[in-house]
Amino acid sequence: MRVVGAFRDSYGVEPAGVWHAPGRVNLIGEHTDYNDGFVLPFALPWGVTAAVSPREDGVIRLRSLQAGEPVTLATPDEAEGWARYAAGVFWALDEAQRGRKQGQGRPVGGADVVIDGDVPQGAGLSSSAALEVAIGTALNELYGLGLTKMEIALAAQKAENDFVGMPCGIMDQAASALGEEGKALFLDCRTLGTRSIPFDLASHGMQLLIINTGVHHELADGQYARRRKDCENAAKRLGVDALRDVMDLAGALAKLSGDERRRTQHVVTENHRVEAVIGLLRAGAVREVGALLNASHLSLRDQFEVSCAELDVAVESAVRGGARGARMTGGGFGGSAIALVTDDRVESVRESVTGAYAERGWAAPEIYPAVPARGARRLL
Image (cartoon, one colour):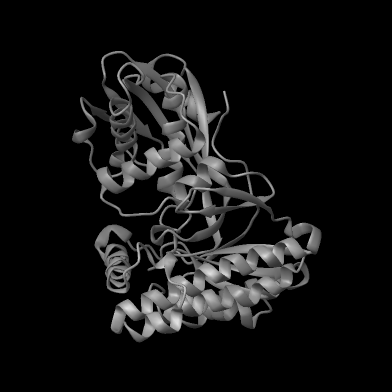
């Protein structure tokens, strides 16, 4: 295993263990998580692998095989760039332990860490959540914290929200921590209740293709935060705790205008689409899911305004090539789209999308099938 050899080269000893956490793709339920809504992601075969050993002196030494020079930190606060996602987990876990009842919390010390990842960065497939959950899973075991998988996910979310400054919901970290092979994860982001939903496309002669546009926009640039603020303002104006609580959409929209009105329309209808997709999957009507993917994309494009030209072309050309449905996935402003495709139309969809990109002089997108994989776990 490459990460073990790199750990040995970096620190001169074998690691105490090796842990893996996957990236995720979201089938449906976009920008609903921080509105206390519903999401339906699944873990991917690609992720982040971390070789880790504890340290008694509190020092954090980090090396990423994808990110250049190693980093040595006396405290998490010293971290910059990619290292903040990793160091933030140390900080969040230590904060959580300090907050426990007297005598119950265990201190979180330092560690030597080497990270290797194969999630495409900036593709909207949650490489950052995979990094956070891999380190959180390792520290939980090494320091005997006794946290559940959901508690690790919550600590990882806290690291990203409060340490990195990215106001994401819980979906990405939960999917990475709790994913199951062959299943999607239904998550109620208010109660944190979960349910496994069988998602075996192969038995239906179908595939879910990820179309990585290669366009990278940083979500921390304020666009994501502004969308979240729009939702919070709309909920306040409507007198509800979160947009998930809107029961009368027409009545709510009559009280709103502008961005708040558009964001509300998307969130409320997207929650209904998640529930509808679950119903179709349980009924075995997998092909009918495609229409809901199309509706989700139009809503994200027009009501939530988080798509971009490359995503729109990917979706439109995939459908033109024979996909049952397609939509952007992830936070938006670049990244990836997904397309639900029958086995006999996979090549025509590939040709349609790559041809549309070529016509515009854009670099060809990466296109690969996605299947649900296991969540975070120890490898060695």
